[in-house]
Structure formats: structure tokens, C-alpha cells
Image: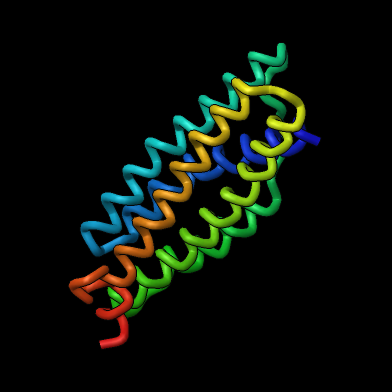
Length: 160
């Protein structure tokens, strides 16, 4: 089961490496664009961590295809190609990105727990590191959407 979870996550990360540049180009809010570009670099690192886990187990990364991430990316591409108010589009991009983050957090949480149950402390540590980064990305998207204490977030602009 752990191998299947890791294969799914690896496919998801590889799909995101291809999709995130389009999301960054579609974002008009500078903080959102910067956050997506930063997360693209993290995503590349997530894929490398998964490769490290596979190598540590004497396996090469599988060529499975994550259909769940494919669907989330397809939904996101609808937003990327949409026209209309830029603030509303940015709010929709954030919503799509957070769906992706939550999907990944569920997968990484499961994989981390399985690695822990199997006594694979090295894999557990790498998976936890990625899970922490995914959670931070989600928090940052929420901050951009809501504007935090200043109430100047993307969602506030989209409603105006």
C-alpha cells in the first residue's frame, strides 16, 4: 500500500510541475504569482524526495498516473483559461490551488503514517517534511485570499 501511495504522489507532483507555471502566468495578484512560483520550486523538491525514498528501497519511480490530480488540474485549467475580473479569477485560482494542496496533504499524511507503521524512519521524515511544506503553502494561500489582518486579500477584492 505504501508503494501505491508513493507512486500516486510521485505522479501528482510530476503533473504539478507541468501545471504550476500556467497557474503562475494566469495570476494577476503579485503575492499569488510569487507564492505559486515558490511552490513550483518546492514541488520539484517533493518529487526529488519521493525519488530518494524509492532509491532507498531499491526501486525506480513507477510510471503510474494519478487520475485524482489529473482531474484537479483539469478543473484548474478551466480557471486558468477563464476570462473576467482579474481579482475574481485570482480567487478562483486560489480555490483550485487549495483543493490540490488538500489532496496532497491527505496523500502525504497517509504515506507518512504507513512509513511510520513500517518502521521506515527515513521515509517518514522525508514525507513529513513535504507534508509540512504543503500545509505552509495552503496557509499562505489562505492569507493571500483573506488578506489577514489588513483585509486586503484577493477574496475581498473579488467581492468588491
